[in-house]
Length: 223
Image (cartoon, rainbow, N blue to C red; front, side, top):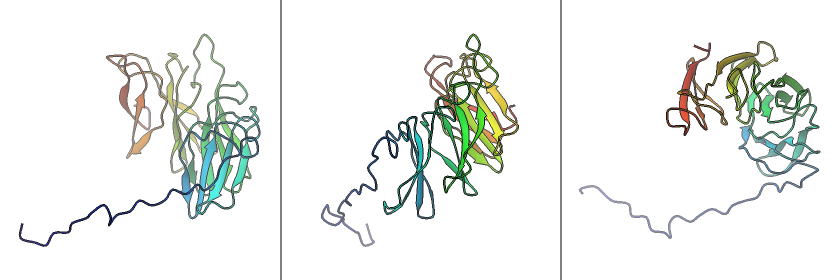
């Protein structure tokens, strides 16, 4: 070696202390936050799976831990138990609930960052013999591209194996892009999607050639 070398010892790099920004109190502000956060400026937004008041909540907190606010508490009829995180676009938060809504099988919702304007964009339909046109139980988060939201539902659909769907941010134009078959394409998509160009990528928990799940891709037009 001809150049100078920098030697680091354990003493030169010290771990930084962990800071608890907020301890959720249960009924008042929610509990069991399964998913990650989304940040905008110095404000963090997330979901709590339970409580707030009874069926989960959307919350906000400043990056220094101050200003914790329960933006929306689910009452089951407007959705229940958000397991995934949120996406943010133009001061509007979008997310999913696993249960609740008109049929009890989950919702896609929107709420402003100040807690106003809560809207159910889509309520998943009641399955008949395990099938329907849109899927049920959306456990994964959404992604947003312009005015379009994309997501997954883990069960039902036309083949009882879950779906990939899209809809407009105003709740119109719900479309099932793909119905999983459980065979080579997999079944039970629990996670959200990623978007590159006009192509969506995702995973399924089961199905595929060996029954142990798949990595899948589909174009945003469903092809």
